[in-house]
Length: 478
Image 1 (cartoon, rainbow, N blue to C red):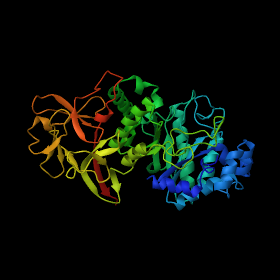
Image 2 (image 1 turned 45 degrees about the vertical axis):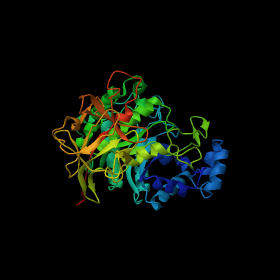
Image 3 (image 1 turned 180 degrees about the vertical axis):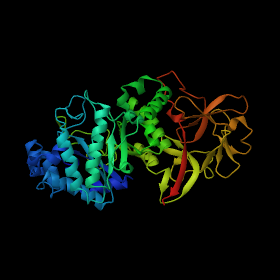
Image 4 (image 1 turned 30 degrees about the horizontal axis):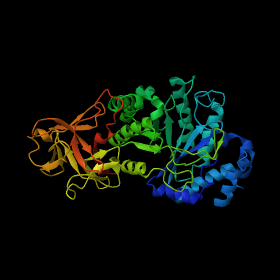
């Protein structure tokens, strides 16, 4: 019930790391017992850790955050939220579970209303107590009703009824807070919303959340052709969640993977997921920041291989992954403090880079997406520099494409998005008409090569040839 990492480095250092990494919000978990069990209200951090035999972790907290051991766990939670506010970081209060512990398992008794540990009355009380506790905390911008509803008892009609109740509780106490609503089946499925919700308090404050992981599809990413499976994933994502964006905001409140880079299933999932996030300009939250846990599933000081930070909370676990994260942090579409666009950028999900600064590089290569080159993708399928006569044209196998004119009549300048993933940009060579795809070599230089892994073969990796043409259009808020 204490935010992780306080045994590794000072709280203010953690908050500043969050900001330095480009994040602006923390999804901070809490269990129902934390907000409803009177015996816990007087429990101090020191006694909580001693009760669990976590003496080494407690010693670390005493060293790095010496004011915390004597605080109650409730007060310690408030201190974390206030420190995040001091560092201009927003907070979403996430009711993650009822009984404190690791989440989630289909049989853990915490999955759905009425389960062993999931008492609806206590859940209502917990929402009310947390809404009241933080209603004047300016950086608390939202509350999620419940994380990853799941289990043998889940039911769409029951779910909808509790959505109404939970939303009304929060809206009555803190009408400024967003109310964030999880789908069913471990928050993989919002398809019940194909029938719009009715009689829900303050619909303008509703935000629906969805989770996505490679493991959610078993070993499908590794055992299938990546293009075929990415296409299947994109369709499933639209059918179970993406369609919601026609009526409500959608929040990808968890996604992530093993950041050691050795998990083929996660690697393939992330390559596809980054393309989806960029294309839809999704708001998202990455699981996770923490490099370790005080205690997880009986293991003391367990390392989190999905964590942005290393086990000591000092270094970035994967700088290359964070480069990809930085590429999807900027907003691409919608209301903003500035006006920008319309134009397109060409994003390479595997590297987190874009086709960039074409006038300065010869040959054309990838570079960071901030200040990315502006492009148009015309109805004739030409990739044109914005407001120019120059377009991208294939030259020869293994050679870099070039910028030239007359793209409307040259077959080597018609770039089609092919394969089930929709991320291969393909054209024909000028001399022999051979079909090639845009690719990138080990030096980050754009080249055209034979298209690979278009379908069927599960052993090959097409990710170097995956590109996404992204619409960028921001307009000033009114």
